[in-house]
Image (cartoon, rainbow, N blue to C red; front, side, top):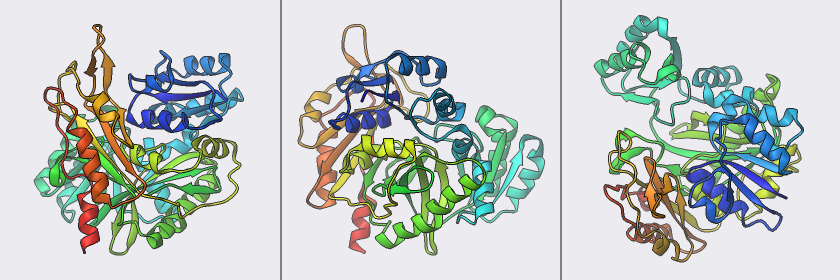
Length: 432
């Protein structure tokens, strides 16, 4: 079967890399892809938001399955368009994907269906004064989130009332997040540790993949600004087998039932961003696709044929619910970023050492923001440039962490930076 993957980042590289291992995959395409993806799939010069162009390509090339990586095409309704033409595609329809592209909808949905999450209120742009008054009286810290898609950066954790009122002004009045911030969700701050759980679902049944922990802040020790993710590891010990059972029973299953009851049957990957609190797991956010960089650790750990799983979810033919994934070993991904990220950064820096890192045993260098310069050299083209992943089927997590950083140390480009503490939370947890 010929397969098309949509997207150009590290998540899509991981998807392509994993799908390429299936003996059932014929020609593998990626639109538009990147230099790393091109080693496994044929690049297609169509942008992820060009629904018509992608549909025409899939039809003309008899693509048997299209896999949507990023959230923007899902929010635009690419799945609806493909299904209307009888084309198989992995991902939720637009009304189901609203669980990511509108945080206000997601919070109100969770409230309607009794899904555990933080207390909240929603404010629109014209309610800026009311929002400022409200946050000035909230217990601190308080969390403000842009309603729409903001590339994982539309969240402000405010530790003083002055910060909170300034954030309201920045988002609702100054338009810090553009149209994505025209509505703001104000949330209770949850204490605990964050974790990510992916459920691949056909709308009724689901398969949970290895629970992961992302590292959102740009600097070690969870300091600095939020980013799209500076690294991840899986499985995370904070999501015990009992907690994972609760995630399935209290979060995933009622979400799928609620979506179906509201005429939004959800097929695809449901990403639950969780806070593991003293009273159990609570939802921080839902995403409507595989996470990045969590995919770079969760997909390598998955021991089954990914193509079979995605087809069954797309066709509504999963045979059973699996809420305790079989996971052997561990995986660690360290993101290497451009100097200045997540703020302004310079592109076009020559990257060295990728081949040397890639030759290490069970090590994958997933490309996220790279391109080939006219002279044939590999250069940076984004904020998050590479995701360096080590996979170990046996041995302790600290050995996997060491292997990932061994590979990172072989790569260089001007201004590069990365966190040096990916996975340390897990090591501390095992010592408690």
